[in-house]
Amino acid sequence: MILLNDPPRIRSGAPDWTKHKQNWPHSHTSRFLQIDRETWHIQRMGAGPRALLLHGTGASTHSWAGLFPMLAAHYDLLAIDLPGHGFSQMRPGFVPSLPNVTMAISRVLKELDFWPKVIIGHSAGAAIAINLAKRNPADLERIVSLNGALQPFAGAMGIIAPMTAKLVTFGGFAARALSSSAKDIGRVERLLLDTGSVPSRETLEQYAVLMRSREHVQGTLQMMANWDLSPMEAICAELDRPILFVTGSKDRTVPPDTALDLSKIARNGRYLCIEDVGHLAHEEAPAKLATAILNH
Image (cartoon, rainbow, N blue to C red):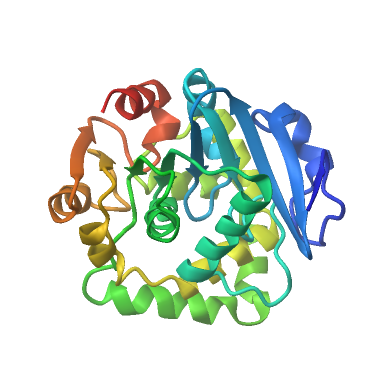
């Protein structure tokens, strides 16, 4: 393991850390962990019990910008760019299925000797959090699912979404097309508004940086193509650790009823709905989410 202040290399088509770090949220906490042929972007801040933050599909550590300092007063926080996302670069041939991503994150935690008491996951990050809890339950005390994407799409979307992702990743054509289209920041804004959330100008610009990266878009699409959520209900039912299912009332990506249903299935589940926020609730209203995490 090698821990660096800057990435040892930047692939063609990946976001350039040297160009963006001055404006990237909490970049002073950033480090790059090199494990074999993988480079992981991590951020660490705070003191206290250890807590792991896992962002959702298409995002990066920037997603925690507002929440990070609020939780750092109570926790020793570690945030990680998921495989193929943001400034993390995976070895060639890595397949970002849920089991593989979970094992890869476990490897990072082992290298850092960082075993969290709390895991907080947003959207797809919630699925990884629950999968991690199944693999490494020893030190874990609880899980927080923020607008967790934990159930397969219903009906035809359950077939169309993964098939589309597989088709568009072929040859990287879609990644090039989508990253090129993100030069129009209005398109990026419309995509975020479709989640039911209203992004700040700063957040919008950070997502635009990511979406203009062919590597980031490719990593996002590949993760969609290989994601299988069918085991999640059974895992939630088996886990004995408390799980807080938080949802935004205006979430247009994951129906709020998903969190309510899973809170009833989980052995030790609780449900909380935050009013007037969408899928990116923790970005829109970090103070509300910090209160929910700390007080429930």
